[in-house]
Length: 483
Image 1 (cartoon, one colour):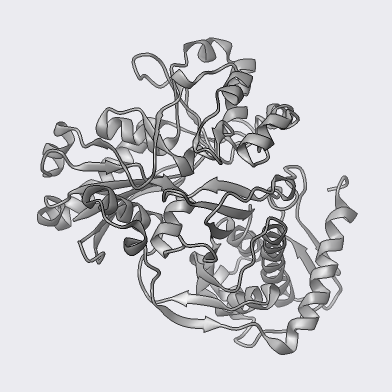
Image 2 (spheres, one colour):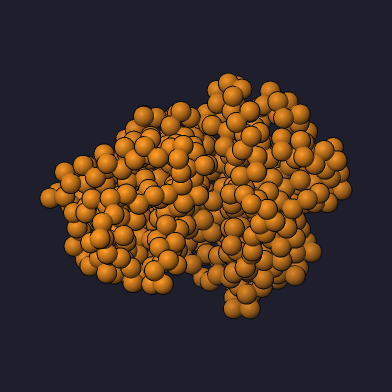
């Protein structure tokens, strides 16, 4: 048996698979986000441990015998969080999360230093880890002076599981301190934030061992001693391992709270100017690119709150057949946008509204707006040298066939729907635990699921969608500075 632990923003998921990669069971522990000030987003790392205990406890209650057979554990987690520890491994302050924007001024200052984009292949975003440490230095100097370790969220969980200060390439690539091509810490970039390599965890590949489960926890959970804990992955790279998106040319579109267009690469292909993320993959000698939309299904959830109608009912009103764009356009920038604009200040907008604009017309505009945002990410990946011939759809929004038809037509490529199963980050983490424990072939283990259905672009509406996309593209420069 192999256990995947995924530390998300809203909870910890524990997923158990067997040697044939069949899901045996899962458990969950809930988490909440603290927002003490506007733009702040924090969690207490002690809550991560509590939620993990709850998730594994729920799993043990149903599958104690299977849990006892665990040989490997893989970790996945929310990226970019700054977990600061002193010399005794005590947490110095609440973790500053990925969606915290307080360090926007520090991020802009670091990004103006050309070394950061050159070495990391990425813009220094406010959500990344390095600017958060610069903010702590500027605003909480007493805390900064005590920092002995900077750990990412899942790697703090690893410290509790194993006693080891370790990380891996995919998650560390989102710190703005990693030399992403060479897959090692950059002393130059660390020095630019008045840190050094001594304060960073050791690095392994996601498929390699990064500690063993502490005997106290093994005993409490009914496991044998010496359970291998794999390097694991950041959440999107872990989802890619779960989806089998590990070979060059493979890609997925994740239609969740935020949206991700993820492409696996066999080489390092940076393009920071278009706000594409270029990170190490969880597998050795592999990289990946991501375009990121900050409000994907969140845009529909917002409309749901405004109208008092469930999100599924809203998309249900659109029917089955894809409709031509109505002339109403929606920009899904409810909390700013990442790719391609890197604009934290921009906000969403409806344009082209008339007396005849019904609730269904607004829903259609939201669905199309998110599809066009994915088109923006596709264009950004194209500029970085990556061509996509098809994508696999995952995430809660992928339950809407209408939305998938809109995405396929906007991208002008087929969208595959995987056969039933759990292919998310926890599943990918469990696969990494299997690989590390058994020294298995990563590409054999991380196979793609069977395709249940393929959504083809609507040939009749291709021209209308292309025209609507041009209208969508023209809106951002028109409202920039006034929204």
